[in-house]
Image (tube, rainbow, N blue to C red; front, side, top):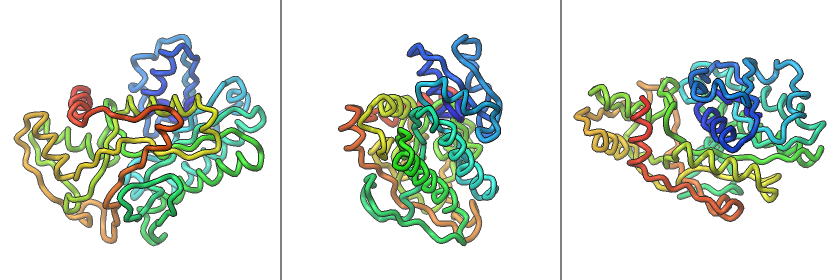
Length: 314
């Protein structure tokens, strides 16, 4: 089962598991996912798609009990959505996770819970490790509600593991990019690519010196599949992403170079993009030693290849 299976990462994971020969049940309410993301496999007889929120899905426990594993990817996505709909963000991230953990518990069906690099908050460390202390901003800034809700998902999943013996694995997903990702909710690379392809100015929020590490969606999916299949991953938290840093200003320049675009690059103050008081993470680099030790896998797709692949599908 894949919750959020019609989303960006979820649809790629759906394709991967179908190609591996599995039957896949997707639960998605299509609030941010898109049925078109599953167009290539829509007629596969081993795919079942249920349009529903996880928490209101009929016979959820029975559906889960028929599965060998659950990938819980359903969540609110994107900074712009979080700022625009904070109540829905909190409800989605908390209620849907509680529903899937509760449904999986009677049959002890393993659940992989997708969390986020956002939980590291305002940490100033050079790279983030899974056992780091976390530093999240105040509740007066809506920007941090997403991080807090996903962190509660982690606490809840580990509570089900410790108290009720439900096998869970938590993955903190860093910036994942590739075909089918949309800039609709503020995702940076698709925004840059869309502007470069149309010849419009590429808008870089802030001063452009903040850094990110971009991981191809195929690499992220490979990591998720390997973690789900690894007994050693049960009850543990893993970073999933690339560890090759680039400033957002350099990313904009790289997009222009790779796509041979003449688009200008324009710096936009945070307050103009998101309103007053917005706080961003200056760096977001994962330490991947734990992922590599347990799975033998390290994401390594070059950035230029990631840009070309994403641009070809836009």
